[in-house]
Length: 433
Image (tube, rainbow, N blue to C red; front, top):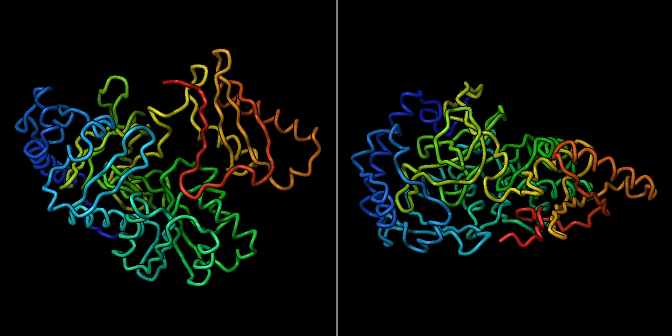
């Protein structure tokens, strides 16, 4: 299985990983306390000093950071190094209010690139591969992260960025790309376009590294089938560095967290209490090697489970499940938690493409949920009666999955706007704030 970028780290013993975490955490807390007045004030408020943090067993004593803190401290309030030592920012598309801006020293970028290199090698990448990076570049972390990782592995790197699908496919066929990196919804769209252009036998892809949005196992199998590849998940967030915080291996049963750089905890989102391993809750990260923008106990709002079960790939770092939704932007419809991934699972099980939109509205103080789903071209020729019967079938299947009624509207193929970045799956017309 020897596909490791840094075997001595990726396959280190639990004792060794713990030792790194203990030493680095103690150092990091002192660094942040001395250099980030914003976080020092939070520690003082909680009555914690660096002396109270002797090992990762003391991590729970530290205060959390949230997106609200990042907005409040914007732009420079959480920077822990002089700006002369910072060489780059990256930023999120920030769904609400101010954008999140993260800072990097050159050392931070080198470590981030190494994390992405681990992900590429876990997907079978070597210096003989041609890696097509079709994540957005610029402020978005997807492109720069995988680009840097691809260079570290020594792959021929195609820095395509997202969009311009015809050019994507031209380079993919002309240069024989073997690994594709992009969002799962764009991968599905590329697969669709390749089939339409009759170029399926001209592509040499063997693997894909897809992240930045939620996707179901059904969608994974569809993409794997349509492109003839193995599809690997990758996870990250700008606040913690970008993609490569964790990544999937050949086992495809969760993503290994790079524990030499990030300590993961699972908490109860309501009480903030740390939960035992194997419990489902909100993922919290502490960066222990970052210099410029080291966040301690940052609440991701992603709901998942951690597992230390032995992995067949030989890596020893803890695995996180695919995020099972969010503790914040999940939909609460009629008091019921609704995750888009649940709806996607139902649609794909019934043979519909992964192109859908969820529309939520509030009429006369009552929530209405509508799911618009694209028909396949075969279905499009069905009679009105057949279409109504199919809509009814989906209504029943969604009710079984969600516990609430959702109106289903089957729409013409290709009528839902395709996404080249993150798919806009949800339109929430309720005035909830």
